[in-house]
Length: 187
Length: 305
Image (cartoon, rainbow over all chains, first blue to last red; front, side):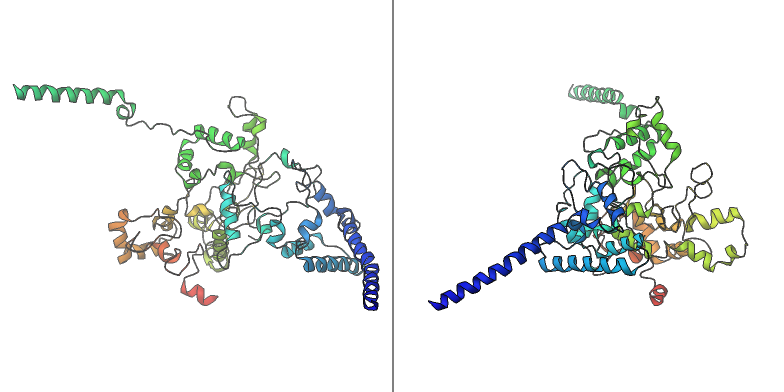
């Protein structure tokens, strides 16, 4: 009987400690995952403003891709996700006080380098069947099934897509020009 | 009697055939080309329909070239290659005025899109990224830099502007520029030099070997694609080839070669009997993968690497 009492007390203590811990972690995660939170660093504000005017926010589907949807590993890679998120947060605070000036161009290149195709393909999964865009089908095939040595990233061709300093909001459904990838970035 | 019947019958047949011939316009006017039709049966953006319909009338040759190309088969239209982004340096400003012309059926504001005359390897890389990556590493893409580094004729001013234009830049490429009026500088364009320096920063021109607007793989597989540049005393590769046994067999039997084989399937002994320039310098064979880096297999270039 005593054994059960001890077990019940231990479980109870576990719950008392773990429940607030988990819920606080969760709460913190939610609070720190919004674009508004990202924009609380003044260095990031222009990027968030550009994003808000982009087709990744404004489209007929009503779909919004948040900062984290692209800039962090997919949540199903749980450990990577938490680690990367914490790393980013800690790094940004330290950098804020140590560096003199935030070089947006340099950081843009660093972001391109950090992207993996998985991050884009979380949402953009059906990229081979585009009967009205055969060229894109051809190019996408060379990314999904690359010849050895010719591995490419989505952002090699699709860049300057979101964080552009533009005066007006770009609605995907009112795009005046048909969207095209820009061709290889490093040519 | 029987012979007479046969004679009448055959006479009738001849008369009928002649009548049929005079009725059929194709036979009656064999010297007049029939304009190629184009029915918009597949999904094409309205702006591209405007391009095609207008240029079909103005440049039937260009249209016909395109219509016979693999691009047309794949529903790749003018817009897929010529569409520019607003603010691009090379937007054809004069062309934009056409959208305000009421005498043109497609002269409407709603079809207005920025168009670039010059299509660069960067544009091609949107659909053919691997080919362009290989090409951009090759000496072809960098040949303009190469001549300025090593050529005394250029560096010591030993030739005239005209000699440079027709003698050097024609093949090595120009530095494409915009003149004061906002149009392409006439001294730098038209040009299809393999090392052309484009306004978007990319180097070269895919149309050197795949001439527009057909862009055929079969063309680039033939020595004639190479010989407009690789000739003469300073680079006599075509003369060497023509006088080799490879060249002899090509000239004797080349008309029986299959130059249209799909990429990656062109096979020695099956599709061709003797190699052309491309067969050795570019095409894949056995385990060797094809490449658009023409310098990849040149021994002195591989030593340099």
